[in-house]
Length: 272
Image 1 (spheres, rainbow, N blue to C red):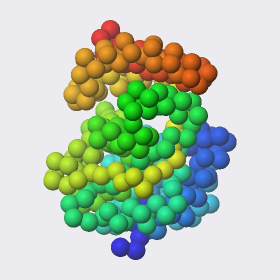
Image 2: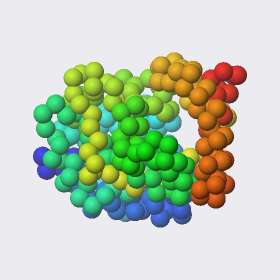
Image 3: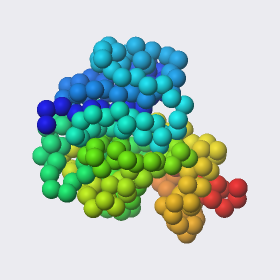
């Protein structure tokens, strides 16, 4: 295999990433570390420089405008893939050096999905997950792999195309589409793996609102992704963890985000 198609979802990606710095580095890392056949973009009608910047790095990019939520947007991208394997890359990650060269070694046997685990690079998000290293006594890789086994991930992921060409992702999945795709592949008898030497730097910058978290809570319940007991337990532990984050890192935003996320999930699951 000489080249692969790469799919990316965008929506004002240039404006959302430190005046375009992270977005440019993301595209640079793809161009440097992946042998791209077609660069396929599903864009949610960006009004900034996103599309112009994409054409700077990939002049022949295929850009498709769509108002679809993430699940259907990914399905649209898959329909345009022409190569035996293809890759999803999110607009806020920077691939490690030789990403594809490393991942290619695992493209064998019954492997259907190869996930590049994410080294969280946003300082506030990173301060939140540090607490889990202490509580669970896990390395960063072990923690991220544990999360992947539970719910999947697509921010830098190789997928065997024939396994998902017929996929129909529920239109309501604005999140958890990564879990749905991973589960779909595994139910066909193929493995989804997360090698330690394949990774990206993830500059995620989540904004938690009651509305968005309530929708997540409803999906967790509908698809049995999280029990009510776990939602309640996480809510009870949220404040102590938030205080621990504040004590260790002095990061008020990280502590506040920890509390807001689990409190809003609890409200969305039990009170709305």
